[in-house]
Structures are given as structure tokens and as C-alpha cells.
Image (cartoon, rainbow, N blue to C red):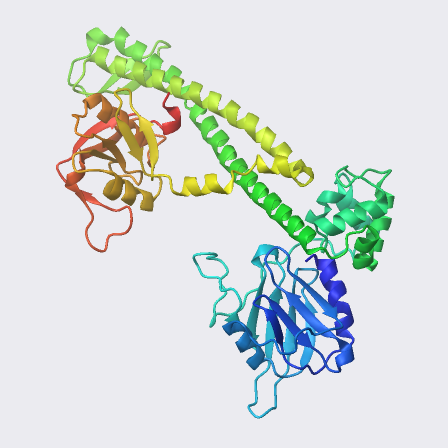
Length: 522
């Protein structure tokens, strides 16, 4: 139920408060009816069916014999026997509070309040004491559903986060004009409080405008005039357009709103990922600047090869420009070997930079498309929305997907890469078998990587391939020469009390490799 409609429904009730009542009635498990005193005052109906919740003050209380049908309804009836003293809506949010005074019957009752949330498929009712401690909940919400906001008896009630939108009842014309300029009426609910899909449609009809066409200087005055009429009489505005209170239509609107919310969340998550990819690609591309310096060092080593003795750890040479140059050497290699290593490192950096630039361009192109989709999201039809968010079945299938990133090496061996501490545990102790090869960057936090042997002998080239991936998916991913330990999975274990992702291992060997990400595998 939209905020302006809720305010309109509660308006007639305010003039009757405080008032006694005849106790709650419950036509079904999701409907709460409170007959007021005197009978001519009518009854407050609260319908909490998911996707179409609403409240109304009507003239009839329905079946006076309707008894509680759920434990929550029984608790509500017992705890709110005192008079109804207040009905408060938070700004134009889709929630309100009913406050009940103390009851002085045979068994006195303390003051209580009922928090009613008319928030689409998450519609709920929460019974609290005067201090806000939850006494009962129609639909309990545990940490498995929402770890940020739980609704369970014994906890302190926390309302949903408030919206930061303009209240059209009190905002001045200039503020409303600035908020609406360049936006379609169908998307105005993102900046104007209390208005949803149904009222937006009625608003557009009153203004004689297409709800999906952005407002400009020519159409803005008509839109503001029609908005004032909607604010003055939201129910009348809907009735004038033949909308009325149609539960089926309201459910359709709620489903569309949920679809748009899901699409926006999906696009924003994808936008964040792509921005990260662009930054990572630019960082990798900048490393190519060092390639020329490495090649110059290789050239200098070859030019002075006749003067260098094998086994030296460093050399002081005269550069091609006459300036002294100090180079660090591998004592196990001669001058030519040290030069070849520098040429190889330069080649890998240049190749990595080329791949990074290609990925950056692809990500930047997709990012442009997503930014455009976010601008017009509110105006998309249902078919277009369905193409943005994967269908529910696809999401379920993705949740059931086996853990870890999967790569097949040139020899046909599957390499599995853990992405989190929990997934590292699954890759190591659920996916891997005793004879599989297990790898991890030495001395760095990072992925557990497993080469699935499946009864075959794993060649050293595959071990190097997997080691590059282990280094790339670790904290050392931006380094050049990373030590990676490898051993058999049967030599890896976790002692009691160790946190997720922490292991011990034995009989390992170590290789030094240049990191590579899975996205860099051709």
C-alpha cells in the first residue's frame, strides 16, 4: 500500500482517538479487524496478505465470532485490551503504529503497541511492549533471512530504514519541480515519497501525460498541478482513473515493483564488479611500463657477459648512457641466463598488460550499457525487466553449483580455485581426493587450489599452471615471483579449533611463478 493511500486511510481514524474498542476479530490468518466504539465508528481492517497488504476504516466489522487462528493473533487479542490511543504513520512510509493504553479489567494489562508494516511481500505485524521489546511477530524474521534486521520475541524492535525523499504534502513547488525535471512520472517514486505505481498511473492520467515520457518545461506545470490533486485526495485520484482498490492490480503492481528492485540490485552489483575490473585492468596495464626497463637490463647483461663471473649475486655495470647501474643476479645462472629471465618477465608483463587493456575495454563498454539501463529502469516493460535478472530457477541452479572457480589446463586436468575461506574448506575437504594435488601461495592469504588427478599422473607443467593460478588468487597477485607450495591432498589437514580456511600440510615442495588470474586463461 502506497504511503499517501495509507495516510488517507488513517486520516478519519485520528479524529476518533482515543477510543475504546470491542477486541480484535480475525476472519483469516492474515487479516486483523478492530471494531471501534461506538459501532457507528466502524472497524479498522488490516489485510497483511503478501504483495497486496492494505488498511482501511470501514463500516462493518465482519464476523463478530471470528476467533484467533494463530498464536500471534491470540497474543494480540490478550495484550491489547486497553483503549486505542494513537495511530501514527512514519512520514509517508508504508508502516504505522497503533498504540494501546493500559487495560484495567479483571487482569490488568500494560500498554502495548502494534507495528504494522505494509511492505509488499514482506508485510508484517509486530507486537511490542511500551519500551519497544518485541512480544510477538506474525512472521518471524531470523538471521538466516535478514542478518541486519531480525524480528523475534525478546529483541528490540527496529523499524525499516527510512526513505530520504521529498514529502509532497509539505515540499514547495520549486523543490518538487527540481526533483521531477527530466524524469518520467513513472519513475518519480524514487524521489517523491508516498507514491508508487498505482498513484503514478493515476497522476499521469490526471495530468494528461504519458507516464514514461520525461517531464520538460512544457509538461512540468501540468504534472505539478496533477500531483497536488493526488496529494489532496489520493483515493479520489485513483477512482477518477478507474483504478479503485483492486487487490489483483495491487498485487501486479507490487510484483512489478519487486522486479524493478531486483533488477536495480542486480545492475548495481554488476556495475560495482565492472568498476573493480576496470581499476584492476588499469593497474595491470601500468605494469607494462617496467617491461622496457627489464629489457634494457637484459641488453646490458649481454653486453657485459664476458666480464661477469657465474655465482655473483650482484653486479656493478656501466650503463649505455655512461651512468653506473647495479643489478641483482641469480647466482645459479650466468649472464645470459639472467638476461633471459629479464626478457621473459618483460614479455609476461607486456602480455598481461595487453590482456588487461582488452578486458578493460570490454568492461567499460558493458559499464556504459548498465549505466544507461539504470537511468531508464523504471520505464522498462515487464518483458524487458525479465531479461535483466536471471529467472528464479537459474538463481537456484547457481546456488547449487559446485564450489570454486573451475579451469581446465592444456593437458585436460580440471583445476578448482577457492574464493573464500568457507569455499577453501569445501574445495580442500569436499571436492579434492587424497591423490589430488593441493596448492597454496606460501606465506600469503589466498585460494586453496586443487588439481583433480582422477587416477592419472599430474605432469609438472600442470603443477606450474595451477601454481600460477594459486599465486594470482592470493595477496601476492600483483607480484612477479611468488613461492607456491604444493603437496598431495592427503597431506593436508585442519586441527581442532582452527578457523575456516586455515590448514596445516606436510611433504610440500615449492615453485616460484608469475601470478595469473583465471580470467587470463585463454
